[in-house]
Length: 457
Image (cartoon, rainbow, N blue to C red; front, top):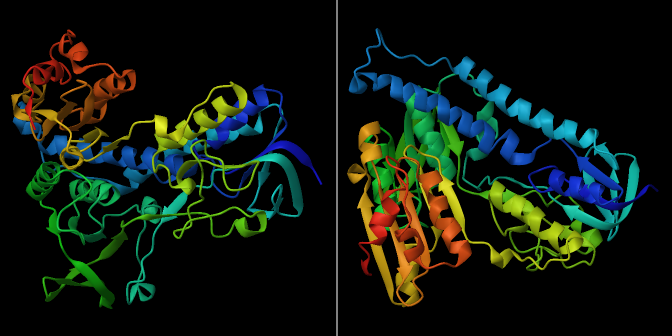
């Protein structure tokens, strides 16, 4: 049986970086990948979807050309085959780079195939059984497919399979009004599809504040996206060349007819076929691997990183998992999951950059706090760009003067949020940024202005 110092299962954002660090430390490493190198982000997540978002943005701005004094003769068209080809080229280059880096890494052996535990320190892949003192699980997740009556009788997309579309769906129905669903909704609407979003909750992305949710719903509605909230899907069925989605809302039954269906209502971890029971690795009721604050599982010598541990669902949290493990094992540092501050973005247009607590969470905490807001139409950079939808909001602890959280829904909100994030990691008072001199004209220059106008929450 081949033995290694470490086995890494999966090549998402944590695995390859950890392999390189371990190999550089002189350890003998085995990496196992059953399909596409790079994990969700590179293949069906961030890289391909943001490439498609960019194509949709280009189409949208072309249609708005007249607003900027630019003349385009004839209607703006979208070549979906070309959109897909561009997306495939971008994602393919990233995937090949990850694979090449691992296959040429000294001290690292790559195994192609599905990994399955045979014991606490052994893993089978193909006809081989490998052993190691340390095993790192980085297997990611996939779309959740709910038990909707009739779903097994009709074709549907998930966030992965819709990546293969090289045509324009006439009417795309999306189940789920959160991050994945809304990004696809706006993208395909800008490509030219009719789009309907069906959300069970009483508003879109319910984890966000009501003003954020309302603002997003408003600009999606302005683009012609149909939004049905508070609607429970009770069944789906074929109707000729269409798909009928039956819903119930406030005791009233209705149905929506579309040509294609996308499921975007959640994720599940890829842990059900790893043989975790043979290794004794504990999971929760949803299949996520239970880990402690340093990402160790219930079995000594086994760690879980990335989406499969339920401690983060983003590329950046997965990469931070690698940093935590590497620091604890190789750098003699004590880093923990609870050290990181919640931060993420929604890549609609305009985007939402989020960090820390929401306004609702601050209110529920009962702590004395301050708040400042500014509409994007009052930001000169946004006004000049003709992209004035959205607003900015910052929350501050009244006693410590430290920033508690912020929402930046608007032009460059996904970048501006890092100004606040860095200050929060420094645990510095908001007055540090209030006195900073930012460059004009930018969006971030208005953060000091906002902080000079804080009011009791």
